[in-house]
Image (tube, rainbow, N blue to C red):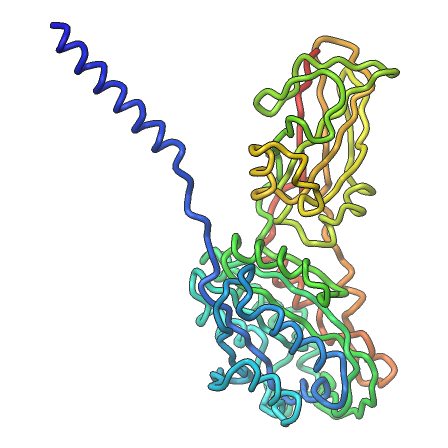
Length: 419
């Protein structure tokens, strides 16, 4: 009988361990399979390639910074030219850089933006990141404009926007998200108005754009690595589909910035002692990778994060990026927080009135509408072109509406506190 119970105990222990191991199994981290790079070569792009423009400086440096780097997936870039069709580039990245610097590559017929994006999506596998450089002008093909010179202006808010929205609704269903970065560069050569007439530009600044397209998790990580590049300085930063639910989760550090007596317990603080002359301080780690870099910047958060409390007084002492922490002062478990979180918020409680209180942090969901200032609907005047893109607001509105969600806040973190 004793032997029977002994075997039963061993069996129970084995099953318990098996369940525990199964529970602790983590989902494999999604890694970039390959990076596709698409360069638009419609005739409207030619002026960026002429002379010593910022464009011909920035694009080669971006490609060199990305290719082969471990943080970007290690592999070589798969390069395409794109206009009304896709043309794979057969040389190396170095050959491509030399070609766009010394050869006329932009002279193809234009294609509708939604069709280009559909072609790019067709080449983007589930583990791919696709980069697309374009002037993002919303337009019908040349032959359509010839029959009605006003059609771009007439139809941009309606059909052209709707076609873009439809394209991104399909991408959303396939779990594909996107980010858009804007840059400025001198432009030398022919600019094509919404009526497809030519205006000669001689170094005026014009925007160009970089799309990052792929799986939500991969795009989020890719954006984080882009932000770390010294030469990556966009004037516009928009995300689509990365943020789909309010950020509520956090981790509490045990020792980092710790002041006073308190305990961290399952998303709450207990046994806290705090009076005005002797406040207590703790820090939490949060993952804000779903937010655009401009919104998740510590300065922006410091200015716009709304705070409220119940039965206590507190303030935010500091907001910083996890990459800026001194890792040598952290416990091993705390170092793990840095792998899955992007920001640290340091909180000081100066008084608690009752046995239970609460700390509330909210960042209201307010989209950056700065892109509207970069849009123009009549580009026939030479002086109106610098810094503007025809019908840009309708392009962005179409993408934004495809990924629209009903959340009221980007962030809503609630921290129960007990004496």
